[in-house]
Length: 173
Image 1 (tube, rainbow, N blue to C red):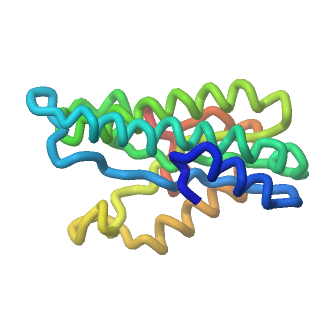
Image 2 (cartoon, rainbow, N blue to C red):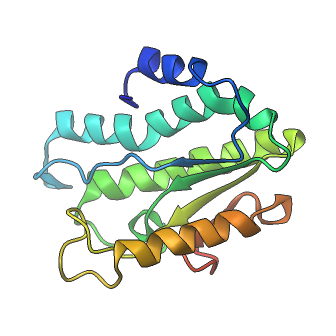
């Protein structure tokens, strides 16, 4: 479904009639070609925010009733180390800003969903060899995916509200 279309998200959620144990917000885009402080494609920046920040919140809200029905509900949002405020670089600014923003949204969800027993984290998948990460990236997609699922299996309310790597190590916000 199209994560930027609220009706599409709502229809996808309404089409399910069962609990969801693990919801992973994984849709994301790198953003426009021009995304520096001195030369920004503002329409592209807005699209990056729509996909990388607003859509994960929309998906979380739409699928919340299914998470609430789970015995061990977990919500994970794929972020990036590039969104860490401790990583001071200005390349890919729209992408970096969107990942910093989704980290804050995820932190807010962790706060609000704790009372429902739903554990929530932002997760850095590593620098992955994909179309977005490129051939020079550090790890294969399968290694990242396995790590993310391992973190998901161990995730509980004690770990909620954190920013973690695919290997479980905590990341700086």
